[in-house]
Length: 460
Ligand code: UDP
Image (cartoon, rainbow, N blue to C red; front, side):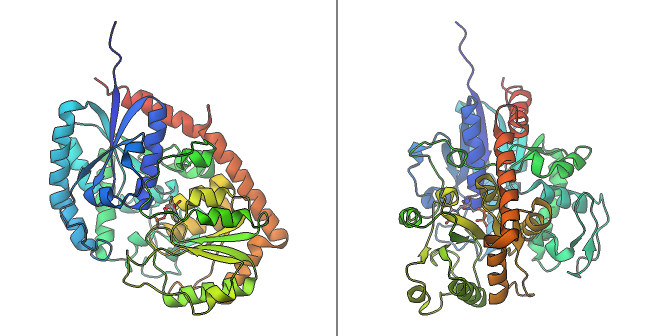
């Protein structure tokens, strides 16, 4: 009897929460389609991931980024990127050499933030695909800018208008921050290099879904197409009730907050989280705390421990916890999927990282956008003006929203006719997101196309 071929794929990612989660989610879906998946990340990730790696259906492999484990990567981006380019690529190449002695990879799937890996993979003669882990809108904007497809206004002036059909007209300040002159040169150079390299990739998948960005996706067909396979969220969020699903969490989640939510009335709690990187200034923290206090609503607020990314750590105002006792809970890290699925949650004050944005979509939770940098401001603009499942806080030039503005947005999303309208739209998006992932849905079809025309076709 002929032996059945094992179809194998390798993925490469940095150990950042917003990168690992969508890579792992895609990995799990490929496993469910009969593909054997290995995810390679750096040694730092091995030491930071909290769950037992043996319990994961996706296998893990590690390589060194060339820096010691206690090196402060978040505050030394230059040194981190340099080390990845020089040492990281050498170590990844060594790992690939040893893995390919026993594995036959049909392709390697990278994300946009491991540019150093692109050439290593090509040099090993393995086809390379990319999972674009932001909205397709961002892919389109960057591509059009760095490949000189469309003309852009003067990026020095945040009030200038960007005319880029099919987008509604928007302000320069809402472009991805990595494009703007106000960003460190390093980021602009990186994005430029990335988009010069994108054309060499064999396939670009996206974590978004077609229905939410149809015109944008179509507009890329004649340039470098993107195939959305999302929303790329965990199987748990899609209703798969596995008790011990493997998560690549870099912090321990405080599950007591779920019991706390159990005791709150339906649609009564504001959930607040700013993801895994963003650090609030003291002014931002004070205004948000005062707005939450004044709102008289219940809230669950994630404030990450200061041990990581501690340079600008800010503190909750004195007395805040005492003054909001009984209706407010602060935790260091949550099982965000469980929180967003909880019926007591009414809305989500979010930094609009793309994973959090998709998670809010799949659960039908309206968003109050408090974006900071990278793709977040563009996502917030899309949420308010295109998706219409939330509102965008107006901030000053230091990205501080006033107490009154936060209170206004809480009212808009939780009370009266505006709240009903936003919730209705959030539920429509939830339905369409789930449909796209079902049998025959657009995302499921794209993933099958990728598996059949790329992964299986490259299996020798
Ligand atoms: N997350 C979580 N618990 C928290 C806060 C965040 O599990 O308390 C997860 C969240 O569900 C999301 C990821 O961390 O999948 C953050 O990714 P996102 O793109 O939203 O933001 P980033 O951290 O990259 O800025």
